[in-house]
Amino acid sequence: MRTVIDPAGLTPAERRVWEAFPLGEGVDFREEPAASAADSGGSPADDPAAGASWGPERTVRAEVLRALLIDGPAQDGEIAGLKLTGARITGQLDLVYGTVEQAVQLRFCHFEQPLKLYGAQLRALVLSDSVLPGLKGGNLRVDGVLRLSCCRVTGPIRLQGAKISGAVFVNGARLGSPAAPDADAGDAAAEPVLQLNHAAIGTDLWAVGLVAHGQVRLNGATVGGQVNLDEADLHVPAGETALHAETLSVGTDLRAVRLRARGRVNLSGSRIPHQLNLAYARLSNPGGPALRASSCVIGELWLREAAPIVGTVNLRRSQLDLLHVPPGVWPDRVRIDGLGYRTLAPHLPAEQRLPLLEREEGGYLPYAYEQLAAAYRTAGDDAAARTVQLAKLRRHRRTLPRYARFWGRLQDVAVGYGYRPMRAAGWLLLLLCTGATAFTLHHPPALKPAEAPGFNPVFYTLDLLLPLVDFGQETAFAPRGWYQWLSYLLIAVGWILATTIAAGRHPLPEPAVASRRATTRNGERLPGTGLLAGAPGTSMAA
Image (tube, rainbow, N blue to C red; front, top):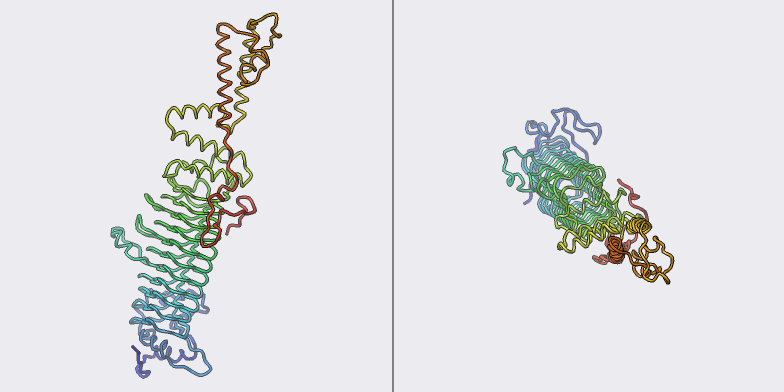
């Protein structure tokens, strides 16, 4: 329905806006007009939060703005535009399915009712520093940028399915209202405060310093550049999702340095080709998942200097090139079945990484140990890789029946399942010294004195200890009494050592263990399966 405005019925404030529109000039109603666009608004009287008390000298009806934007006056040689600052806008600005050819800039304004922009097509929309009760902009089309920087919005911002050719700015915005201590959790989390699900953003989503008292929803969204949530503060009731970004697709990075999330962060199925940077972040969801990033394809995951995570972490079936998580950041329970990565940072001894594998909720996972060993092999640390393989066999032993556990423990004590071969040399040396000393003090009698060679206690002991080795001493002499029992013991221990060495020699995994699990998705090779140059920790942290 066309809105017809009689210029003769305009208030003085509205007439200023009407006359400035065709010239593209700005109108600033503030008592202390800002010297620049970066100014924060001047005196407290100009704070849009107090806009309900502003008088008619700075009040403009929404229907007047709608008439200007849909069919406003034009002047030859000039580019029209709505540039309004510090106004109280009464009524509801309704541009549903409308096409606006001019840029819209409404800064430091106080809106009495939510904006209705469903299906509208705009050149650019700037609402920075304004106060409004909500925005209904599903399927909105914006050719330029959408700016909601430093806005205070008490109701939901609905931009699901929107297409923004430029960037979206919500940095410094405050969305929603803190829930009362006695509020019902289900009511407090009824609707997300920022809804960009299935939206398409041409360049970046900039939300530095965002404060959201409610869920931020980005699931299914496509962002051509980066998502920046640095210094953001996300609050939801206990057990709810603070950031819902399933199947999010990002062109470069998802930055969330110093993010504070009180609730679940859900990134399942997301594709982040470069960095998911959670350095210095604080993630907390007691009794539930604090970070869920399962089935993701991520270049690098950074949790450098982050606070210990409160809640569980789920990285099942995700593929990464670099995993930078200090051991102290991991929570008591994790889900890492199928997690693939090429390198770890910082480079630490295997003993500091192995406790994480014990925290897997699903119990013993052989592949988790294989993957960790492969990462150490990629870093050139074969000793750490052997330590991981030994830990894997010890962990596996706990799943076996009692008789098998006894044999495994014997292999472990004897030669460390073949990964500690010097233990066998130590055992042999100890037994050799024991036998040689005993048989030096008491020579066993010869079976055939006339044919027997000269007795040598060292080689006689070696003849007893080493299977399939014959120095001619064992067959020529026959000890008696306790010395006979000592010879039997040496023979038995020799066979046990030989058997455990043979049984314990398992080959180490190849460095490219992850390549055996390599798959392609949409014709692209998944990160974590290709060959990358460089050692762990060499990637640049933002």
